[in-house]
Image (cartoon, rainbow, N blue to C red; front, side, top):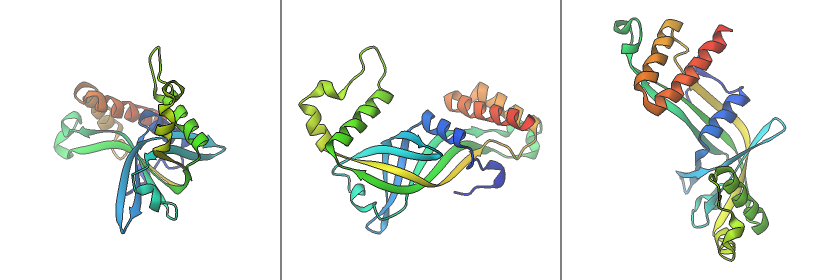
Length: 209
């Protein structure tokens, strides 16, 4: 990832955790038969001391799991993003449009999970994290279908070895422009703009401290 110093948040564990918590539906990239292969998967994030592990699973027919053990894989965490108009700056004639966003690239190695008990625990943990409502779905309620479901997947545990975390939030602009962009995103940017505006506001406040 192109990572200018004023956008680099790679040392910020809290910022990474917040980004994954906001959108745990990641893109897992590996090499397969000489070409990139991408799977889009929900994951669980687990801190182990100062380290980070991601857990998830593929459908067993997905070929990615058969070829990724002997390589470093890439996980892309997709944060909020939004267009920023020069109209929102106090001096629009002196600048150009841009796109603000947050994203993380996580590099690491995978351990396959093919044990039925461990896979069952993984599926249950995913359901517990993402199920909402007064009567949440539980795997135990689906027996004997649950055994066939678990047999149809292959799990993974990724251990993070390198991180690139980027928050491109107009940090290279003066505060007056940043405040103008925040106001514009809040009024015209929709849900994505609101999320980017919140990150920009936090970054501006942190810089002022």
